Length: 399
Image (cartoon, rainbow, N blue to C red; front, side):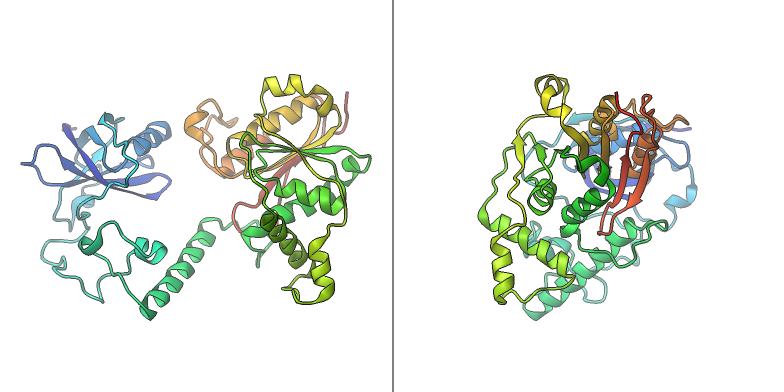
């Protein structure tokens, strides 16, 4: 296979799916025109590790050396006026783009011939600029190839953009096994999770056992469990978060809305009174630290009184929550979201596959050994938008 080594600046980067992404490259040698380069795993040209490393390395603005070759499928070049290459090796970053300011590229390559490419901005050809409709500003200014509507046209374009964004998000998170069709808003996720916890782990919590809410942020889950149900909770969160009164009032409003099932009459006296009070006086304890070996040693008395470890979209803390709970023989419930596979190359399924997706992370947790405590690691779906599959375990025995 004929290969060339080319050094150039990444102008655009776009990922079409989990196994394919494209970049536009402007060679540092100005005698060569801009070209398109793609990376993929589905044809065996790259493994998942090199693919992910290449994607992170190809940050727009960075200068990189590539070893390229003609596409394995010659049809990739058809109908394109620019040169198309494929890369099947890790890239070498020469000068990384480190500025805090966003890189402003030139014109993107397009998959059409020169004869059919438009020469002017036309209403029929161009869609609204996503940066403009999202933030009402665009770094490209007059150079932007997309529409910058104003007035009523801006509001129409923004509503249309938000509707399409919501549609795309639902499509990405669609799971045919999920029984919830019309789901609750994403903003209610902590409340819904807390209600599910109280119902699912009633036996473990009835004797006063506490909940350890790891990577809990401001502690929404813990506040609902403690102030609504009187369950002792401890939030483990490295960052100190402010808990202003308006935030607590907002959480209480969400609680009332969830309980009623519709928007309450906020002017009603009883509703106004309910907004000022909580059913229970129990409040969460906040520990601003990490869940690590040092924490386990320093907080051994606390852990003896903990019945349940929980984590909602807890990112890098998800697997440590599971491992710590299993080791201690304590129940757990986590809702996985981001995987961070590039930080955890050792996490593989029993079949040898690298854990790179949320679904694989869920399977990875379910495949874990319960270390003699019995019970089965199970999954369930929660009734809110977004990543809503919870993985949980209740041990049969304790030592």
